[in-house]
Length: 88
Image (tube, rainbow, N blue to C red; front, side):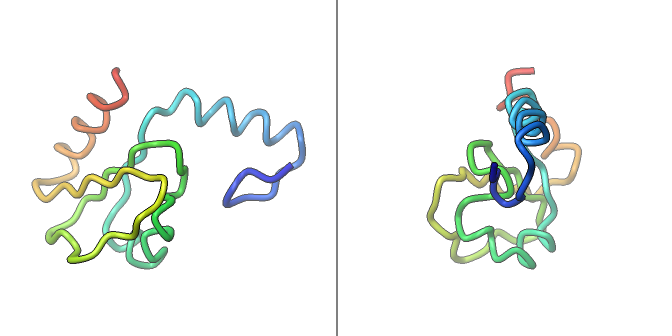
């Protein structure tokens, strides 16, 4: 079974899917976002909102499944916004 961006066996994929269902959101740094080229618009976990901690919002954001929120006022703010978006 394949769970983007990873190739997993069936049992591992089931655990991974359950983990995704319980996470709710993802927080990442701008450097990771840049290195991954914004994941081509599909984030590291495409179904989840993605909060990117940065000093500057990029001029262009790739279009795809993911909802990107660029947070310029620190990690604590990004975590708080992600928690609110996740509903917990």
